[in-house]
Image 1 (tube, rainbow, N blue to C red):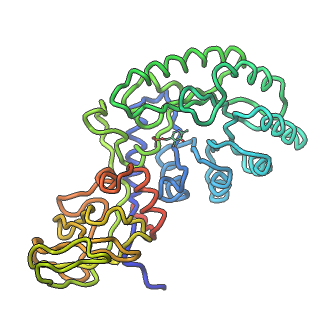
Image 2 (image 1 turned 90 degrees about the vertical axis):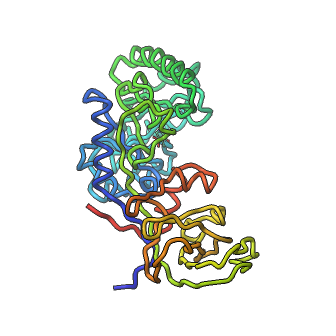
Length: 375
Ligand SMILES: *Cc1c(COP(=O)(O)O)cnc(C)c1O
């Protein structure tokens, strides 16, 4: 046994399953779910995350790249795996061998994939991606007809999905997303006609699926909501769904000391104590994802109470003020994300201090630390 780090990220797999089921209940049985598990399941762990979601009923998974799909298959995940960034020639063999479903948006790649699959006597299911205002991946609406006409004549590839993505689903003004959703629906009708078959249409991310039921179509693609973070502020959510946070990040106090008023704390002495202060040293820093932007901004929970970070965050350490907390001792747990007793720190709160969004907080904390799985 190696000595474990002071820092640990706990993943509550029961909460993940709960969130999946809660989303399935809210969208209803007629709507499928693609569980978005790109980026190591937003820092929660690709394989363990996928296994828990499969246990909760997930049959379709969304990843960013081919290699993630390969890892899922090699670990026994059997559902549909959609590769949202698509693939280039390097990935054709794995797409075939591991039965992945790439998103397609480039006619040349599509033709080459068709040729490759044909030579191997196989057919690859693909999801056609349209850019409806995101300005990211996808064919523009005016190019759709040509693209589909070409696709129809190709062997070795078969369209199984029609996909787009909302740029403004989390904006307080829902009208633009409603308009884009209507447009998606109209184009989708034409697509189905051209292809003469049944493609699964999907466009809604967490924010859209929770706030705008008309965006559900055949399938929804939740990411952040699965991990228990509201995609928008509660006031603009328009949803009764109760999501449970899945990630908790903790460390332990490794030293406590009493210092006088006027004492500089950490590099640069950017913080000077304004009273006699009890300082606790935590063995967590920016290398653990507890970014330097949290210097004199962040808060942690100790004995169920909030302690502010004082001074600069170092590479592997930072200091918090525990003067008001009482009987704090070395070895006490400090919670950087999640709950302790009655108090809790959400990913959105940390994101606010870090000037980013909950997604980045989860990826950082989960990606940088040893994960421990519960339930
Ligand atoms: C990441 C991603 C999602 C999930 O978005 P959330 O806001 O986390 O729900 C859905 N669709 C695509 C194409 C994505 O890249």
